[in-house]
Image (cartoon, one colour):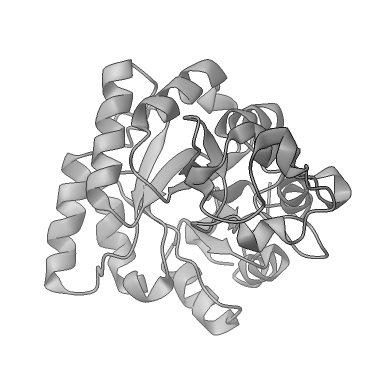
Amino acid sequence: MNRALEGHEFIIDSHRGAFKGGLLENSIPAFEEALKEDANMVECDIRGTRDGDVALVHNKSIDHVAKHATTVPPEAEFGELPIGKVNDHTMAFLKALKYEHGASILSLDEFLAFLKEHRAGAQIELKEFHFNARIVDAARKACIDHDALKAPVVFSSFNPFAVVSLRKAFVKAGLPLHDHFAGKRGYGFALQAIALGSFAGTWVLRRCKKHKIWGFTTYYKYLPPYRIAYAHDCGVKFCPRIPDDERLALDYINENVDGFETDNVPFIKDCIKKAGYTFP
């Protein structure tokens, strides 16, 4: 048994939900399937719509999801076609695209309501950076009880300036924020694609401590296991995205990693169990 993991609040973050077997990525059925598999956090991607809303779509265009729709509204209804950029479409049109298993493209409001209902955490990746006010409005309306969640709700981005800017907007709005050293739970903010293995990585982590950044959620090669202890000293969490590599997963677990982002929740569960951790 790895004694360091006793009582460890392990994060299993399901990438775009468990969107296998025909389930639409970033949809309620995919997120529900992920929770059934024992994920306690679900990852999604957000982009702005033409009418100022925020939609859960990964790619810049809707082509990759629209082609799988079972129902597409006629052009005359919305004056829109099921191709092109997310930004060129209204939320009403995106909602009118229907998919198998009762799925549809979600708004940020709907997604936050889902998290509240299921007490699930989330990693919400900012694909664009022009709608902070709309995100703040959605978070305010959601009225999430962060103490009741199984994992935190975290906004992440490859752009550190976008993360810091959004965090400042949340501070200004008086929304509850994660504060590791004060023991407070609330919205967290995470970074991606910053290499932390070099000497400069320690400087980055100290800056994260200063700006109260929740952690890092990114491809594992940016987050070497030996840097986890230093990150924890700075109040920063590590949740790397890894391939289905058991030895790699165990290397991270044995260094007391906080969790993983994954396309394979059962695989991560098995690795955690092999390391001696027992789920509550």
